[in-house]
Length: 384
Image 1 (cartoon, rainbow, N blue to C red):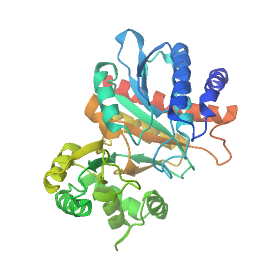
Image 2: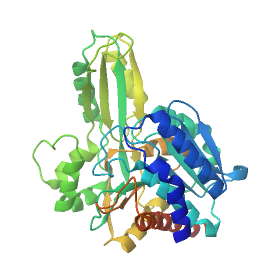
Image 3: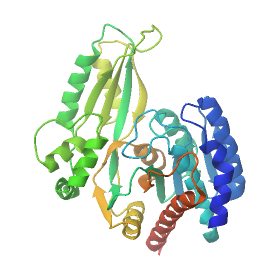
């Protein structure tokens, strides 16, 4: 393992070393060079969706179907990611994903990699890109590897994720706060809520002080309202929320206000757009982001792989009904029919994410490889 991981770290170090403030064009060019090298090392085909912030695919040659798909980003996220991941560690996760695919070459398993500019923005572009290459990206399992800020006693596994819809309102005469309040009121009344399994998971998490502290850290705003731990988790994971964002500088060719909705199950971006258009009374309203909510069954091979791996790298799994933050998982399910499971690989605070030591990088890549192999074992069991 040492030789392969070392070669990847050496080849990808120019990309890893770029600071967060680097212009996207420069970072994108370096990401392209890194992925061209990786495509040759992995015998994969590189496909690029060109643009100011390009997206990339690494696909099996000869139009073969992958057995596992990985997702990664080549630029720092525009939204805060703590405690889900270390700030600015997206490219380290990308490098570890590539090295993990090489570590698993002895089994000759075709794999694919989706590399977007970021995971928290560009949902409409990502959805179109995935749909365009759907036949070559359909796999039984898919993972989004992240770099976690600490090693929890039990690894957290999420059976879903929240969505996020961003709408722009151009007419200054439309009251965005009134529209937001009316829509949140309607969405709260229509919210699907927890499923039967979710109640048991919420009960267990509600009795766990570490889980509640983690939840508070994950929320943008302090959890309001009374109630025990179970009730607080239920509100945080299963209730929609809405925000109004006003631009600091007004411009006639840009929206006068942004409506940001954090959605849960059974809430569709197109439906929210239509509701806002009606409430805006004819004012121009357009959608800027459309991240979809997601649910993954506990028996899905990706989840089962995570549960089994958690028993070897920690004291076992801590299963959450949903991640308390935004993820692109719903886009993958809708575009490919493949659920995207999130997995955080923890690192010590002493690890330099832009200049990791070989031994630190090897450890991250090895765990990523273990997850891939466990997923392949799960799908092989199902096939037999």
